Image (cartoon, rainbow, N blue to C red; front, side, top):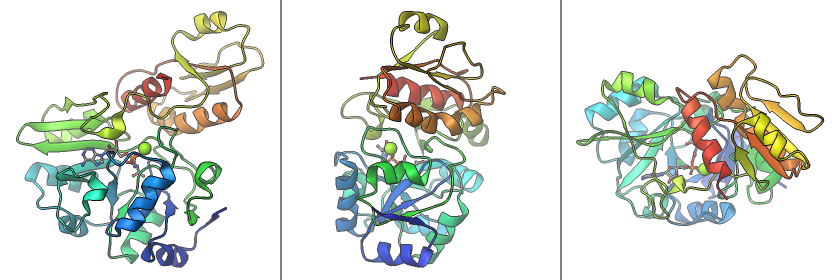
Length: 318
Ligand code: TXA
Ligand code: MG
């Protein structure tokens, strides 16, 4: 079982040698390896049981280091980068050959971001290579927002878990490209579409597709899924329908009179950022309780609420 700790010297030693380290970010924990070491990157795919057609995000700590990983950054991409980094924004940019094709699943673009987490920024400043890091969960399962979540499922796979506390945003980064065709959002996430549109000065096209060979392949229809079935709808009606079953209830701001089953209110004050922050750990806690069914409701479909609803929808697909 991997140790959980804060020893950055140990972490850089492991990464230099091609090992795997779980790293904290503001969105979710990542399963990181040296992006320029193909063997290390292969270990990521293996540990997660992730299909090779699903490319990885590269993380670093400065725009200067990003420039080495990409062929160019358009003015509009640069505008978003300088406004939102460090932060929960991932940009798709034309890939430089220094990034192995394995990382991008052969795509001509590479996904890059500068995460907003002090400990991880410190780590990234100590190394001269980017870290390829998907979320540190088995493929298709709920993303981890705490060190213990990683230990629970990938504790034997990783060499070390860097403890940066609870993830503050709680859902993955928003993935964006800006090309001649305009601003495209490929995954809803921890930075709202509205904020991005404000800074870009244009409307975004949502390319949140569901096919089995998608352009943002992590966007498979079923994802972020607990083992217990998740049903979304009107909670009082669902409670009636499932009254003989062991149910969990995941509601937005209001608790329901439900008896003694598991219940989690995402935000008592109706704050969408708080709801996003709590979503994955709430789903996980309920899943660990091995319920017959988890009942959930959508949150208001605006700001970070759109990312929350997107994750709920995918978690409900079996
Ligand atoms: O917040 C996050 O983004 C977290 C933290 C650890 O940074 N990472 C994360 O990685 O969510 P992952 O691997 O779980 O999701 C990455 C997504 C996948 O849906 C993948 O298909 C997409 O990014 N992606 C990566 N490279 C791409 C590319 N070149 N073109 C289109 N989509 C890409
Ligand atoms: Mg993921």
